[in-house]
Length: 479
Image (tube, rainbow, N blue to C red; front, top):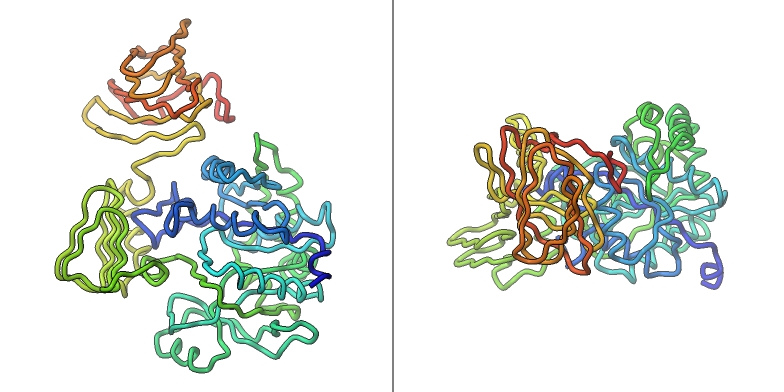
């Protein structure tokens, strides 16, 4: 253990590119599950960050994230008072193998012997002591030249996860094993046989690698992907606190997972089995298993009244949810959608989202609350030639200096203090005060105060789309 304490810190690489469609209607493309507080008051991403930020085994985290979510991620990390090593932005998703490669390239540039812990941002882990113990065993195996994956000790015949077969014990590393085989998601009968056999674990999708070894194996197996990642990283542009990968170069990466690209083909693969209260938190049924259940095996979140209801997951994000005489259901109510499904169909929710997308339903990907780097807005009413929004602006934040060709705006301050630029004038508005922005007038809304600013905005005009905007100046690189 003394050797572990004196070893260089492990570099956490947190991947945040998923869309979490199986957790619709809460998780949507514009605000996916990793940013939602599904298991605690913190989001899944924040829980992942806290897992490594509070322990001396780890260096500052490196994030590889979707460009569209950059401000949400940065704000959630900032709220934890954590300073990341870097936030690398993918122009589009290319799966986990290229994402890990970019991280490895970044780390080996300054630390050739770096160890990297690659983990998704949207997993739940309840037993941190067991998690840290598994990290120590995996780090010992990685320092011995292994690419390590973590196998979760199965406690039920789960058909929603892939499996890993345990091989022979790894020489010189207690609690680590050769990796026998990867198995795709099984049917119920095969999952039951895996559970009975005892040498199969769930595939967690969490890895601990020597960064240089991972790059060397990916270079051997997929040299074009490594070349594309090196070019994308070398041509990356700094943007505020972000590093944007070059779009053209990154587009040439193969769309492959770490398992498919490397782990199934390398002679260096190893596994560490662990029971740590893990779930990929990927479906409503998984959350039902993870959450505290009442005497009827119901999980109730929000304003829920359940009568004669059993083994159900009931979540009200908006309004009152009441159930009577039902069993084995998932019922999730948000401000703009209600989903009712049988618990054994939880894996099929993503197919439902695809149908909504084909039908052009905005609820498939957009959220009622739209998050921006300065705060958020929510549409309260959308009618012919009129739209009403509730806008919040964080202390010290400001919107871009902008103009609209087709709409005028009325602003009413509900609480807080607003600094308003309107044409050539600048005014201060307090609670219950208002102003009018005529069509074609340059304007800006700013919060100079120390509390969140709440404003009701009434838009009127011939066209009210979000694309009717001309930005003259912007603090977030959007002008």
